[in-house]
Length: 169
Image 1: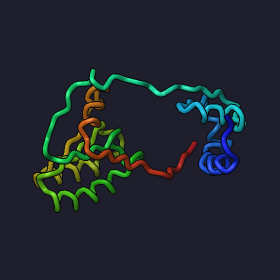
Image 2: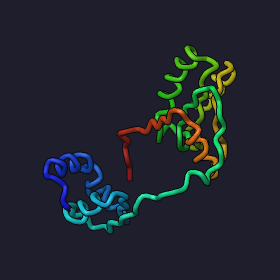
Image 3: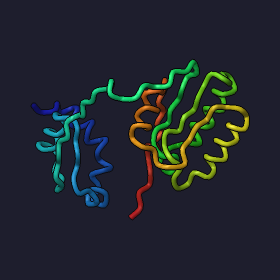
Image 4: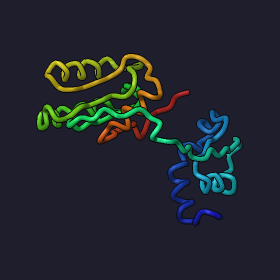
């Protein structure tokens, strides 16, 4: 029922940042999906916030719309296009090389809307489109069904989140 001691040390290494007073004080609650992790938090972590367990959601994939079949390989980047949240520049730099090598065989699909600081990313996306590459993005919020369908259609999902971000109060 309890997590092994060496795993506790590893977990605390990863959670140390969140446990800093200035950060943990901003939390109203912690939501955990995995039951053993929920027990761990109840028994091992001394946070003065509520800890809730939400079991994984089970859904019937057959009820989802069919996915467009294509011979092109589809690379999807989920979530909003924002350099503050995701390293979009890194993806676009890598994709420039991929497009050069596999020109008509690849689709790059940003499955998220443009938000915040997207100007430089949009210029690079439009430049790739003008060179004839298949790069897709959305300017508006995406309904869940469209989002799920786009991810299901992907051959590769890339989520280039920034690992370290500065948080200011």
